[in-house]
Image 1 (cartoon, helix red, strand yellow):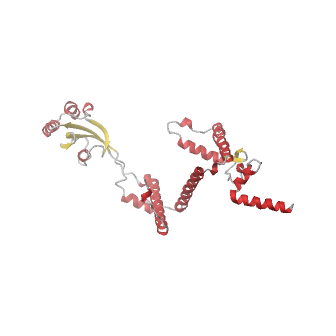
Image 2 (tube, helix red, strand yellow):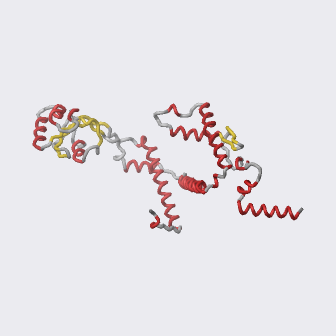
Image 3 (tube, one colour):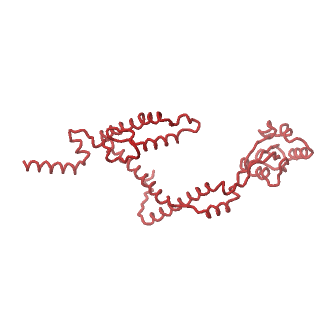
Length: 302
């Protein structure tokens, strides 16, 4: 009897090593309840449901609903989950149903499929990388002096973009443009002349381009329309463009205000923090690359 028991113990141990514990569980006539146990699951907050002893927590429910609501389009706020009833429905219709399907997949051994294990390994790599980046960069801070120095260095670039309301007249020849300029200097109405004589698509609107920013048209246009010397109500000299010869009138200006540092403090701090985080990660990658053996087989890339 002892000999027989010893034989089966040795046989069981050999099978365990050869096939793994999951394979042994399949040999047992008992249902594979261990694969549905809660032992490996960390619960955050109160338990709101159990599916075959796998707990679903309030923390998980809140996290999922928060992610769901963040993905709802801004113009469809009615789709957001906000009430207790909606949260319970999400729990029943999403999380519990998913848990049931997950457990069925485990019972069928799908978590051991080659494609699934490969995908899990890739996901694990991504999560580990994200956690490493978080730990390496979470203590990075930006000082007040750094924010002030950045603001003072780039103050001009940090201005609100200026917009100008412009009218244009476009004619095919320089001679015709000179005639238009003389009429305008004599007091003719710019909008009326544009409607009657301009060849541009804006002619029907009296040459009105509405408010535009620098860079909307071409370089010569910007040089004339956004010149510091062009005052509101005044016209430019003649300049050549891709569609002929141009004259523009400045109707109005807006924007171009210098924002105070208090308005930009948080944005500058976020930008500098991100920059310092990137620099730290690049430095870490550089160090790791120097210490690692890296082989690239470019010929295998198709």
